[in-house]
Amino acid sequence: MALTLADLSENDLLPRLWEHLPTRGPDVLVGPGDDAAVVDSPGAVVVTTDTMVRGADWLDEWSTGWEVGAKAVAQNLADVTAMGGRCTSMVLTLVADAHTPVAWVEELAVGVGERAREAGVAVTGGDLSSAPAGTRMVSITALGSLDGPPVLRSGARAGDQLAVSGPLGRSAAGLALLQAGRTQAEPGTAAAECLEHHRAPRVDPGAGQLAAAAGATAMLDVSDGLGRDGARLATASGVALLLDREALGGDVRRAWEALGPQADGAAWEAVLTGGEEHCLLASFPASARLPRGWRAIGICVRATDAGAPVSLDGRAVDGGWDHFRRG
Image (cartoon, rainbow, N blue to C red):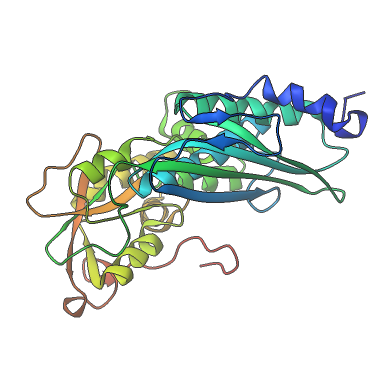
């Protein structure tokens, strides 16, 4: 019979988790073992948190514990780097039903540990709590440091170029495949790439620092879709964003390859409104040279010169992920 959390005390469980997590780093003065960790913070501190709930943010039929842990790390890394910061440490919280398999919890810790280690981030503590039957929640709070002023959503100006730090549409295409019952795909194919990115997205932890150094005027993480997050940046900055169809063509083709024939509309929807991509969207002065890994996808104009915060070919781009309202 599989071991569950009900079979272990908290003192029994914690060593099983810590062995998978990187608990030390150059910014960590006191790691796990006391009431709180102590991290070095000579200047401003970036703080963010994200929570994932089973049934709302993942399904066990689609995602392993490892993938849930990897995604939780990605969400937080993206938010820290979107401010132009460097993630320095994280704390992990698990709220779970006592019948949760210990093997799943250890998989979660391995996923968190591997992705945190790749990013050079220490996991310095966290919390465990029991929950009613069927409940499982994972939360990470991340801390980061800044080399200069934070890059906010509100700094874009008319005439700025608009750019992203990676592909768009992969997570939404992966979700569409899972919803259609396609949980596996041939390695190396677009479908496999999209499934992997939806389940366990990868984030470049240095993308935001590179953008800040290159003069980014505004920036955010594309977590709720290009249309919805772009509108947030546009509204905060008092500008409008005009997207370039040709610049997005490669993203649409890749989503189309994953989704199959007759998927042109769905491919565009994945690119324009798909959430959980976790690349960055930023504006740069027109004369700025975009940093490594970044590419232009449009321009910023005066809000009065456009009919919507975000548009493509004169049509408003809206919709995206919302935790409480769909569409």
